[in-house]
Image (cartoon, rainbow, N blue to C red; front, top):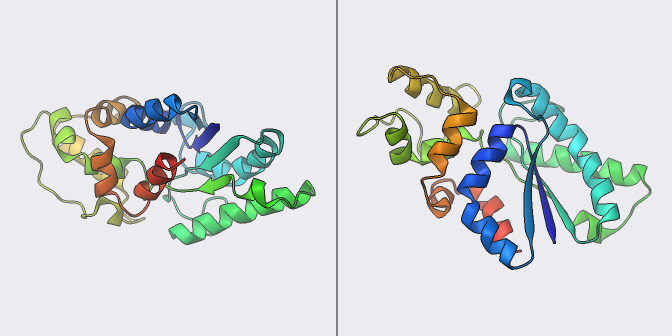
Length: 218
């Protein structure tokens, strides 16, 4: 079985791969290959355009993959932030529904009416973005900032941030407050490689946990 997971940028791919290394290895032993693919090859091309591409192009790509490979599963894993990219949405259900509508339209355009294909396309999201997982790795974040402790100025649970103050801005400010610059491609993997993914799952029960549980149960 091949599990193809589309994320927005290269840093998302790198960070999730290191965080989920034990799970990816365990599934590989079961004959399940898990691969992350960024819709943009570099984070300089990220932001709203990367999210829009993931929301509108990946569902169509998924139709073609699933039609030609009966053993594949395709997962769309965008950020919830920023809102209204690709189609109107602000909440997780609105995001999921919009992507599934794109997928359904792709199936109709190909004349496909097969429930088995529909079951092999799944939508999850990072709420509000990858940096929520970094806020959940509080001790590891403090180590990266070379401080003993951090004053918690963000919402707990970490997935309770919002569109006006998404997790990336919180993390960027923490780095600035400690005389550093947050570099997502470097810092995110280095922070998340030092924590058990199950700890992050427990601290991110709203959106990250359902994604990981789905992978675990394959």
